[in-house]
Every structure is written in C-alpha cells, then in structure tokens.
Amino acid sequence: MMGDGSQHGDGYAYYTKSKQLADDVQELAMRCGYAASVVSHAVGRDLYRVNIRPIKDAHLVTPEPFRYAGNVYCVNVPNHVVCVRRHGRVAFCGNCYDEGKRVAETLAFDYHLQNGVEIRVARIFNTYGSRMLENDGRVVSNFVVQALKGEPLTVYGKGSQTRSFCYVSDLVEGLIRLMNNDHTGPINLGNPDEYTILQLAQAVQNLVNPDTEIIFKDLPKDDPQRRRPDITKAKTLLGWQPTIPLQEGLKTTIADFRDRLTEEGYSLVSG
Image (cartoon, rainbow, N blue to C red):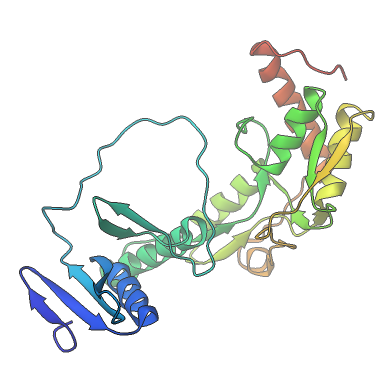
C-alpha cells in the first residue's frame, strides 16, 4: 500500500485500469483484515480505485449479539469469497464452510507454535446418531424424519454420490483417544465404509416402512460425488477404527427420533 497506492486521510487508495486487478487487491486487503471497496473512479475511462481502510475504523458497524434458532445456510461461490457490505463497507469471510475450518486449524497451530499451547486437531467426517436435531438438514436426519412421517424420501440426482457414515459413539471414542495421545494431528476421524445416497435411503426405507416412496430431484451443482476418510493415521497412532455398522446405528437413531417426534405430538408411521 505504501509503495503502489496513495494515502488519503486514515486510509489508502490503489488505482488501476484493470477491474480484475482491482478485485484482486480488494480481496488481498480483506484477507489481511482491512475494509476495502472498489469504486469506478472515472466513468468511461476504465479507472478503478480500491479504497482501503485500517482495521479499526469508526465507520465500521460493530455487530451486536442476538439469539437465532433457525437454519443457517453455507454459501459456495466459484472463487471461495463472500463479500458482505454494511453501509457501503466490505467485510471478507471466505467460503463459510471450507474457509472456516482452515482458519480454525491455522489459529490453533499458530497458538501451538508461538505460545506452546497444547492442541489436538481432528478432521471429523459425516457423523450421525441419537440426539441429532430433526431439522439440521443432514441426509440421515432428513431421511429418518421423512420416513417416520410417511413422507417420500428425497434423493438428489440419481443417488449415486457416496458418503461415509460414522456413528456418534465411535467418533467420541476417537476424540477421547486423540486427546489422550501425544500426536497433535490433524487426524481424520470417520467411517471409511462407503454407501451411495440411494443405498442409505433404501436402508432407512426398509427399517421404517418398505412402502415409503423415494423421489428424485435435480442434483445441486456443488454436491460432491464422493466423501471417504483415510483413517490410516487413526488406526496406526490411536489404535482406533469404527465398530458400529450402518444398519445397527440406523436402528438406534430411528428409535431415538421416533421417541422424540412422538413426544412432540407427530403422528408417525408404525414400525
């Protein structure tokens, strides 16, 4: 900023005739924690100005804490950048899901290396089981609730995309072993057994009501085709691997959902 930009007030401006370069400079500034915005400085002459302000800015809005009990949706965009504008200012957060996990690991390792803080880093893959929220949007809870309520099971695409499902008690055992181990990580914790989404739907269908309909809808563009953890480190360093097969875990999960939904007054399919 000191070399290629010009200082104005308590901030800086960077000028360029390239819109792409202006966008890139804006993103770099926001990744460094600065508020940055791009404006067309000279209409018709393709000149852009990136306004860069320090982190501590009286004009930036300080968010107030509030309670929220609804759904939270992650946003996927091609360049993994989400810009949130408040009063014309811009805040950078990155891809909600992917970037959030990367930042968490980075901060943990920074404290570990700089301050000697003892940490353990686990990378958790699809987990399911009793006490899941019935409206959390995960595929297991979606299928179980739909089946128990007598609704069609919704499969996206042909259902050929695969997932791996680890029962919660297996995961907890893996986390405890990691915490009691000297290895910092990261270590993958999950079940390497793969099932297609259609196979999962059919398993829930057979356990709740074989007559339940399965319907197919368009596959989202960003839906990954395969998710399977490599748990070699967990086996070698922790002596851990999942022990509960999918059928057994689904039976326990379905029974728990049935009890809670019945208490909430829902009329459920008998089974």
